[in-house]
Figure 1 (tube, helix red, strand yellow):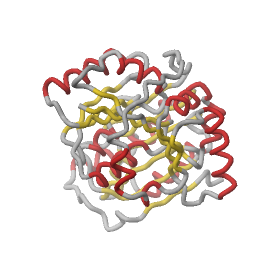
Figure 2 (tube, one colour; figure 1 turned 135 degrees about the horizontal axis):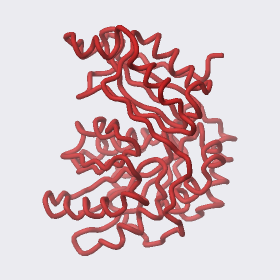
Figure 3 (cartoon, rainbow, N blue to C red; figure 1 turned 30 degrees about the vertical axis):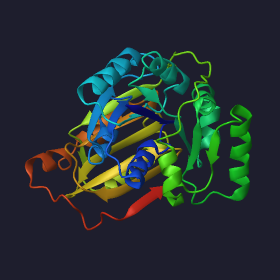
Figure 4 (cartoon, helix red, strand yellow; figure 1 turned 60 degrees about the horizontal axis):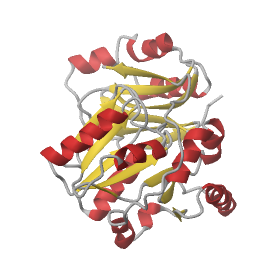
Length: 325
């Protein structure tokens, strides 16, 4: 069983990258998802693309869930024995600690591939300034570094990111262009390049004060109300929100939303198995968030009681915005 770890900070686009890799390589790996909160949002997204998805939630596999991770890996190898296992740590995981734990259980039937780290081109410098220990460890520990969200990236910005990355890790492969446009040979190399064995030094202490809040059976009256909630989040009404993601029911349609790097995005989507969202940040106003998604006549109560329209005509529309002040 070959293990590929795909790491990256909160909101970098790890799950999106994994889904594209699976499509490009035409494989059905087993996935091991580490969600920092209770909601299995990313596991739901991967479930259609993988042979099976195992989840580890309410903790980080670089520290509190380290033993659970290694036990899960051994169980997957013994029970399923897939050719490939793709591990997606939580966005605040220190990759060096994750790799060190995996090295301890590596033997002739379990081998590590060169780890991939996804970097958000839009918020790289913001993230590394706010969380230097986590982001620097992820960069130092990477075998391959991939920039995401590069559509609006100027050449000067790409050069600045490359310079900062090379100062931390001069040896890793660095892809600054759109990964979606890479050929099949590049994608397949991710599944053949063995881990070098080089481990960056890192402690396993989680960042202090980072909170999570999971809201289940949640909904809003309309997509317009959801936009107002996300705008309030960007403006700090609910505390310092570092990351949020989820799927809710709004006015007879499912809407998926995401906050990362100071930008909110939402789009229509097919209905998931359940409506839930997770919020990660500092000093979060938990009661206000809970009220925003539950305290109204529509939303959650309506979607539980009515017949669901599982695909919206607005499904392909994607909105992205910063704070609308």
